[in-house]
Image (cartoon, rainbow, N blue to C red; front, side):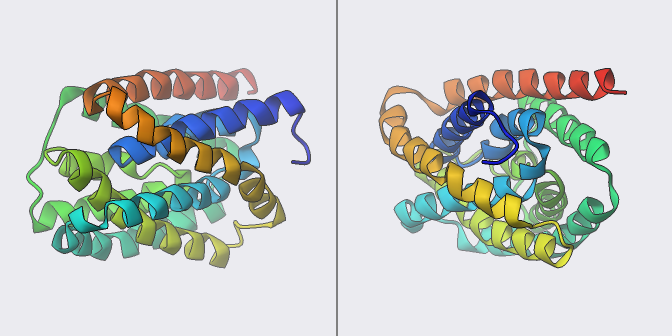
Length: 243
């Protein structure tokens, strides 16, 4: 990739590999784990390339867990995703790079706090629509749309959680990429970066098959929370030092 050192690319690729593995194991976490690291090294890859890479792993998981997808719940959540995606596309078009970086870090930290507190709203129609709208806005603007959906679907486990989350994010990611394209936020650098990092996504997905047999969802989620918090704090620190 142009503009990034070999070491920088390797760090990004490792972050994407681990994040893809996490996403394939528990149904979310790609953006929370990788986006802060990627934004530190190459902000031009956030959110566009991150959303495209997330769409790749969600496609693989959706196909694998297709029998366990909650179609009714996914449909209501996607209904909310539509206006959220439009709002997120507008934010990307009007916010400066520093503003997007700070917003990304803030979303990670809020998601970490809510997930850690264990708040679990009932997955009823209003909650699903609201969570879908929030996920669409945040996912399009920062590539981190997982926390709202993880909260509303956290009582699901295993294949049902992975399949339902992945089905939602697959369609949602396509909507987000379309919105970003209309807003002029998908360029050659986005596409080239996605192509270079796609092998890391495929390796992460392959690794998830072994990890699913060794680690439970609770340990994986704890790991994601820890790493995500560290990345978000680093990103905020960098923005403050650059002032």
